[in-house]
Image (cartoon, rainbow, N blue to C red; front, side):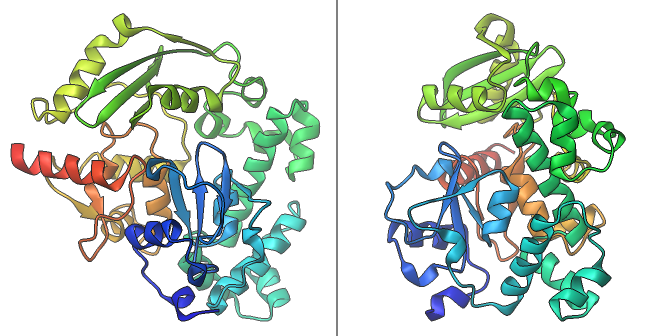
Length: 357
């Protein structure tokens, strides 16, 4: 293990440079995931280099799996030994939680088995994942449930295999987390109607998609076909159709925003999110046009000062870029941090806002 693997505070630019160089010195320091393939890898993986806009970075493999990615069979990123002892502790406890999804996830029982104190375990989890052990258990359980539904299992068998003890636990808040009932989600969004449009914009190509209730996805990239594939991936059975005429007013507002002619966007949204994500996204919408905030400042604003990493993940999973302005969140030291659609687009958005405020 080289010294690079224990460097803390890595920026997204340093992450990306390590991936481009296939630098094995960073194996164990982080993993990168590719949205178009659904796979995560070590920095040194010899696989084809992805486009930057498709890449997300995670501190440990468990965080990538929590976000729905699966391990690369070529580089086996889960076998990279972490240098930071907190990471080793968190990974060991995560493995235990995953192996026993229906067992209690109390700090007392988990820390006793891990040979540490509840306080140290909680601090390690928050530092590495931005979550408590119980929150990790809940997120992983929901991810397993969604996967089994997509594989065609009935709701009842799927929920028990995922680790839920009763149907009420699943249906409780299902709309907020799945965006629909579990049965509808399991059918790939069958019956949900989504209209979309892809148009040229100042940042490349802009995709806007909406249900009858509001905008559900905004994508920015260079490849219109790739943006459309991303839209269809989550709900393969939904009725998805191009409809430029219906979406023209909303598309016009967003493209005008890129040009500095529409500083404030107040568009109807139809978002699927956890309660935590909604709180973060609401805080992002309060950042003034032309201004920035930091991940730690957002964490404090929502009353979760230790949840900086979780705030960063909520920004990375924001489905409606620009309308929810996650590009206005930067690292505490002034570094731009990451951006789902590429750091250069983030820089262009911020510079444009400063020039037009």
